Length: 163
Image (cartoon, rainbow, N blue to C red; front, side):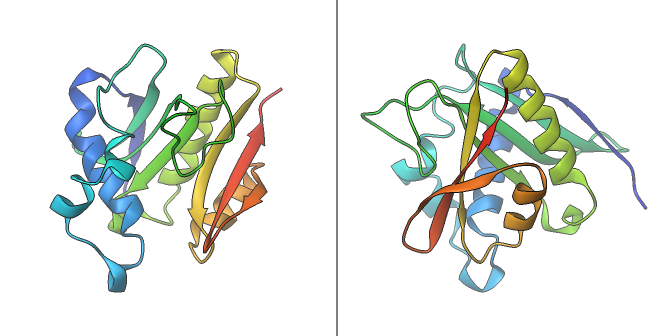
């Protein structure tokens, strides 16, 4: 089993976060959309534009050679431009992506745990995410304490209480 470590995401990680938005959106290989299409779509670029804003936080998983393999980060979305998992002002929405070869090796769980601990340390009472209903990651989110709070068309919004 290959090893990895998790480090805080910095200003210079913005391009890699873009790659992870693509991985998250393309979790089903048979329905993959081109990177250029996803990264020109406002629904996805809202998770990246202006990284790293003062309220943004995130973590990068890197392999033994230091190459990035996954990322999880959160940002606060305004009511006027909500993300897929928006639940309210002052509730950060998380985004997570892991390179396919590293899925089911604990990378997503380690990133998710680091990010929720950071959100708790930053004083947030809740953190949210959006997931397509058929996505296998739903099992991970449930096991980490996230619960469905809103059902949408083919996707659910999940929230974890942090206090």
